[in-house]
Amino acid sequence: MGRVNGKKVFITGGAQGLGACFGRMLADEGATVFLTDVNAEGAEKTAAEIAKKHPGKAFSAKHDVTNKDDWEAALAAADKAMGGISVLINNAGVGGWGSIETETLEGWRWTMNIDVDAIFTGTQLAMPYLKKSQPGSIINISSVAGLIASGNMLAYNTAKSAVWMMSKSIALHCASAGYDIRCNSVHPVFTRTPIIDPLVAMGGGGEQGEAKLVRQIPLKRLGEPEDVGYAVLYLASDESRFVTAAEFKIDGGITAQ
Ligand SMILES: NC(=O)c1ccc[n+]([C@@H]2O[C@H](COP(=O)([O-])OP(=O)(O)OC[C@H]3O[C@@H](n4cnc5c(N)ncnc54)[C@H](O)[C@@H]3O)[C@@H](O)[C@H]2O)c1
Image 1 (spheres, rainbow, N blue to C red):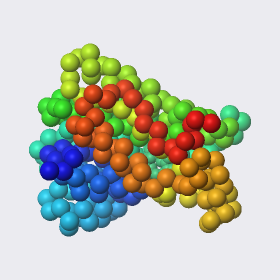
Image 2 (image 1 turned 120 degrees about the horizontal axis):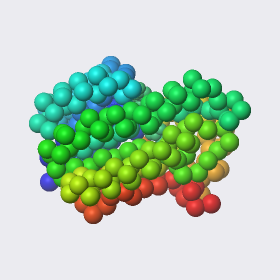
Image 3 (image 1 turned 45 degrees about the vertical axis):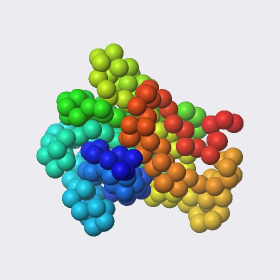
């Protein structure tokens, strides 16, 4: 028996990076996964790799999380393909740089739209499916940037902090409504995926760029996608059945400083 046997998991941003890693790890532990991404080709490729190892256990769809029609279509397709949706992982996200003096309204809205509004829209649309497949789990990928700030990450800090608090509100609503649906947030530090490439480049690129990031982390290394994946695996499984409205810092100790 796998740790998430029988779970039906919908993952946004599943083409690469953390989302793809979650898909692989969850399928290895018995789940069926439905990967969506605006990068349809990437999601399809990742799902095909997983399905090669676990036939019939991985699907994909093109899905822009900022588009309500896409959400409706992707959720309906996932429900049909998997026979329900019991876990929603709101993982798709973007990061950008800008301070209170340099951020543009356009940049601010772009970040909020993808990182915050999409989780509101998608989770609201997913609720009827989750209610039908209880016990359910909603896992929102925030960031340490939602807990500690930086002068040049105004929009990202604000967005990821909103994801943190939105998760608690969703969790409390589900609990008071008597649903067996939990909601938690996950807060990774710099983790080795394409999203940190610009940060590494800003620090001089390559090993030098990575070393600049690593210097800030007490455990003195970057996160690996699997480090975050183990938290997601736990939250998707019934092992975490008494855990809701919590935040999981996968951060090498950075937020303790
Ligand atoms: N890697 C890190 O260091 C780190 C740290 C903290 C938090 N996070 C968060 O983890 C999540 C995953 O990031 P990642 O590191 O895998 O980055 P990534 O850039 O490798 O992957 C993000 C994925 O989201 C998809 N995406 C972007 N906009 C989308 C949209 N509008 N609709 C659908 N899909 C869209 C991209 O195509 C991509 O496949 C993000 O929410 C990110 O903010 C990452």
